[in-house]
Length: 302
Image (cartoon, rainbow, N blue to C red; front, side, top):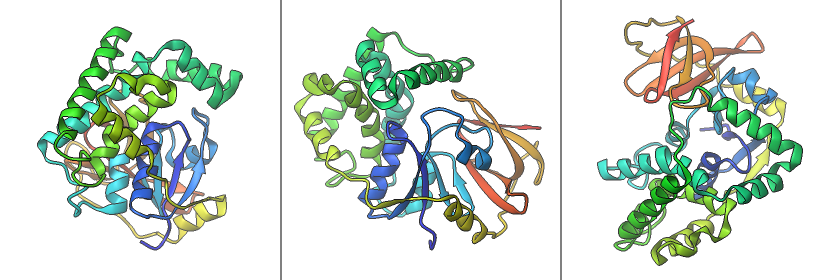
């Protein structure tokens, strides 16, 4: 990898924190583009179209629209610290598909508003809440009632304590991918309510403290020129198998199935069991390639 990865993110994004910590943990230098907490994001929309989830990772002309794909592109899957067995994968999904939503539903509303005010200001809060309401309007995710969400978080941290009783980190003797996946929802919970961990088991509190000492590594701010240069220097054609009923080169729309279901349109170059790749154009003459996971996304003709 010659070009430094460029991360499109914003400070209070939990999935961005997962990727930022991963780059720090692996001593990966990176380039930062801070985007607003909600659309419009002009610098990014010109590249990825309607897709609105954050973070997005750019490596050359490749744009990874998923944190797991981003980390695979950065670090591969050869390290045992990044590979998950079936039990670990179940724990990761629990953290990122259930607890991710539960921590906010469980938080005291006034503390949520105070946190958002500190991050966004008064006008920003109104825009953020209006945007998130729109984002969830056609979502297939069920947002739990506060009491149910609180019970879910309590059950989760108790399970973490059981795992951590046998080793210092979820991934083993040192922090790894599973730790990052399970930590970032709790990072958000503690950002909103610093006292939330007071009732958590001691093992979880100790683990949280150690995870909180990790850094983001070395980053620099990106310019429009550096983004364009990364794209133009990586114009290697990508192609792959496309499964039925779609075909290679077809114009398709890709969108998440669960929430933030805004679609992005491009030429279909790959549709496998685990990945979708579409091509878009940058400034009319250069190709950019958007990578999505197959699981959790839909592809339809456009």
